[in-house]
Length: 309
Image (cartoon, rainbow, N blue to C red; front, side, top):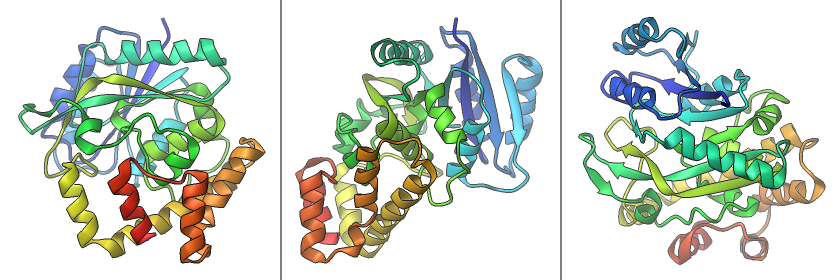
């Protein structure tokens, strides 16, 4: 069997942590190790982790950051330190299906057979959206969010991340690219960054079935919202949306700078062109977005993009 490293980032996660760890330990696929990196929790998270480490010393590995890195850098830094052939990302407050590891690994290995093991590959899945008590709110994260998980080509991912981090598995080829340069300073989200590596240098796969219960609660850093609340939020916060767009351009610029020697020239041109969009005037910027496919999911999102860009 292939060893899988599961990377969990924790921060003040005492409320749901036990449930998540128990769900992982109940997985049908047993050849895994759970690497948990705590980002300076002030609650009982560390005590819970120490309890499980004593109980499962061969399964759990615990590290505590000296300083708070924030969720994006905590995840990316932890992933960089892995050595396994396959790595999964894991949040502290969800519940995994028993076959989540097995199903995702099967898809990654199928893609490796198809495209070659040396090619960077990421696979992500859908998720049930649930409330704090695990009651299902939506049968599909992507349907409820009106996001199209099939739009994972590089131009679309530069504009809009589709990968739900807690569902992602990458192979070692993605890891090698991440390890080839220093950690990014302007990455917006860890899952989006790994998605860009895979889209620019390899392939991305999607499993349409949910593989976990994606819990929604007040402490979520990034969560699921109804599509209508998404629209209302965008209308009310146009200035914030413009700032987020600028952050995407800056992220792309840093991405190209860090990995230019790992990406072929055609993909590098796509990234470089995107990073310069803010330098163009009102008309040309929109023409470039449409011409080269720097777009989001659905008509409504793209109308909004054309208004705020």
